[in-house]
Image 1: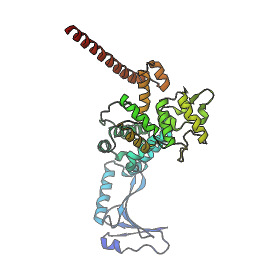
Image 2 (image 1 turned 180 degrees about the horizontal axis):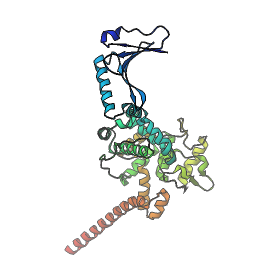
Image 3 (image 1 turned 45 degrees about the horizontal axis):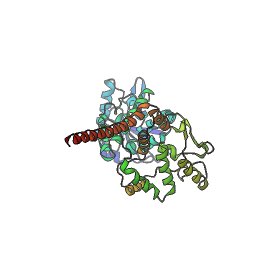
Image 4 (image 1 turned 30 degrees about the vertical axis):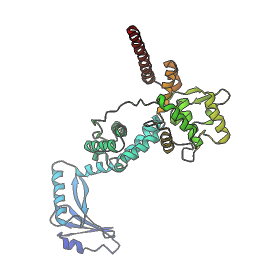
Length: 393
């Protein structure tokens, strides 16, 4: 039930209005000076200014603000602005409805996650973590509120604190989200991540150097954590991605044939791989089979059920080995380099590492070949100097 009456709005009069106590839920007080302006007073004591007007034959209400935060003078000015906008053909009511219906960045990411990432990415949870890390403070922002200037500033900030690669990937994720939102007709504005100048990235080519190998292997031998030791050893010997080794399952190991059958859904390129295992690799698996139970070769207590990336243990290992700037993924590239140095054909290296594109294999292979070429030329230089010295005798 609702009552209404007219008064001349003043601060004193509105402050003196008491909440209805006769069972009426709310009372409207219309201003005698401004058309359509009224104050809604609820039984709970809230006092809110509204303006009312017919738009296209329909009575519409537009909230202006709460009293006393919004003064009488401000309420009249906003009501006057509302009438002027309607006269000019602007439908502020519909504009506000559209604004309220607009998705937040967090809501768009959930759409992107369900409609795209979970269908196309095996490790979609990694991007979910990346979104939280980069855009957590923006989750409740409406999509139209985020500007290109905001993205530029965030990109620069991430570049300073987390590095250029992280900054670029964050912008790539945001751009992809907005593009999908526009394509799915969830958003009609511009993409604020378009046109952002990203940091220049140098392709990573770090591998274990010859003078580092012994120190690295000695550090592994002295590692007290058996699971970490076995994990790192298999990373180096198999050349497989750390995510595959972390999630290695017993059902995929053929102990009779000494094979590791990695299903396509576990692989980055969706191509299954059957990897012949060496005696050293099988020794690790036989020993772990006796020591562990459950689904995974490297069981864990977390939500995945398996071992997770041991960042601290890796850092301690590098410190013992006195090796700097090496990532776990560099062990995969290192194996390719060692295979090339041992004379393996590029096609064998591609097959062993399950590269989808031979260009990826050639990047390591050619670099190793150049090193071999340099050593051959240096030997030739020594031979030339030897001939010269012999002529002078």
